[in-house]
Image 1 (cartoon, helix red, strand yellow):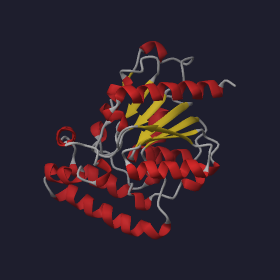
Image 2 (tube, one colour):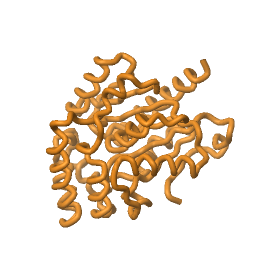
Image 3 (cartoon, one colour):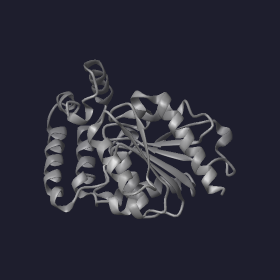
Image 4 (tube, rainbow, N blue to C red):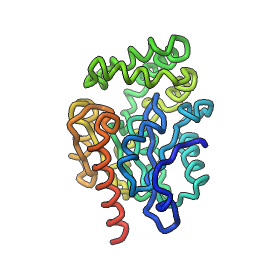
Length: 265
């Protein structure tokens, strides 16, 4: 298998609810979603390993176009024609890029602490920043790089025990695969998709943790600019679904039900 899927077999049929496709973040894998999926037995959840991660550690993409084509292929291989899409951090950015290409089957988009894109004058610096990290992932012991990675401000809510646990979980990654994906999907190479969000006909929900000050502020700005963006806030940091699986599962269940009700109106 090249992805992991959890959920009762009884819902995996043509008349079942629209499946929920889940995309993890950089350094993660599809198993990151399992605690949430275990709490959603009535929803058909399909969590995918991103290129360069998990069972796709030897699969490389070179840019957002190839990442989009990868996702299209994954959906087609499962005969998924209608779907809901949720992504965290990098997975959220890939989900957003995919949605901006307006695939016919997408019924709703949920973004967890992800960036919509930088203005042109900030992109070059970000590409250089990500290149420095990519070189470290390629050349240095993974444990050393991870120790610094999880000291970044976006992970400031982690205490020492949580940080150590996160590092231990990520040691199975292949540094070269992570470096390749980081280069391919650098935030500096991503289009600024905020204008698309403002005009989107796809229902968009953005979930932020109020202790992740950077992404919470971004989400507030987006929601203030366009009231069609449904902004939900949890009392947490960057990786909400990992640290609050109960709350996040309830949030997802309510969101899925809302999308289904809307689609039947």
